[in-house]
Length: 354
Image 1 (cartoon, one colour):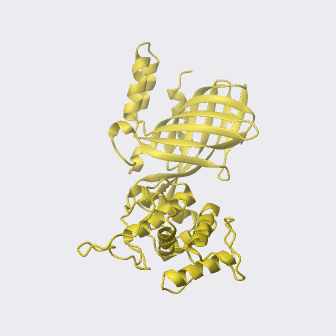
Image 2 (cartoon, helix red, strand yellow):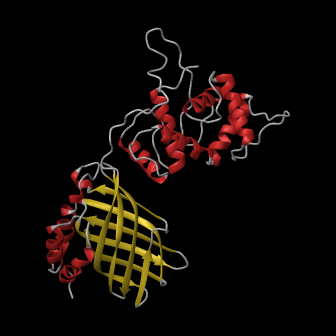
Image 3 (spheres, one colour):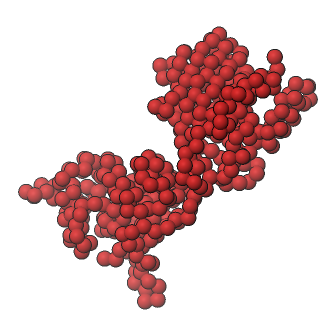
């Protein structure tokens, strides 16, 4: 049988990223920005060369990671049983228990030797997955479409260019992807101060950058005083996206990220604290004008408009925090910088009404 086409190879990669990283990539052969971004995320998590390419090390890492996914292994085992190769030495069927072991690997080799006409290696990559799908009519986790053997057409080739074992080029990705964050905050009943670091992956340069922030704000706390913190060992997820009023798809410049910002946060600290944060970035002069306008009667109505229009990007963060028991809502004026943002705390105090 023919090797998978380049389109089918990309579909295998996308299915792997969907199941391993909880991505939501379409089951098709397109290699757009979101696909490349998730591919870079996988490479960084597995300490591979970050190049947005499915080179041989990345391909092998995907196959090995798939072996640890119980749902995917269970699909392989059931597909082998349907196909007729899921039989151990001694005539007993392999167990569809989601655990990769020597019996499952031996059954994969038997399938490959019979149907692929190539050296059986026991690795379930794009070609083996494709043949299992074709023979059984089943769909593995991460994929959504049933495969059908194409009908022969003397004019249109059955497959497009077969994918060789080596890598193929993918255009470089652009923009920034949220990686993680850490910080500490001190709060009174009405006032609070915080500082920390946000880590972003620069997809254009394949690097990770650290941005420091400091903030001073007003809020409402259930206790007269307390503290909270988060570190790199705690669960933290987030995303970076441009202000939708400008109609852009990605944030591609640090100038749209660093500078004055507004920070809104809701948090609960108990046995296991949770927090949700929104940071409106690179506010610039709109932050100053909005703060001044909010001090007047009618001006308070236009302050949000002045601020939102000057916002270039937004960071949304959620995760686990620790600290003293507390439940609070807060809004703060902060500064995000490549250097030490704590030096801006005096300027922050001058912008907040006493």
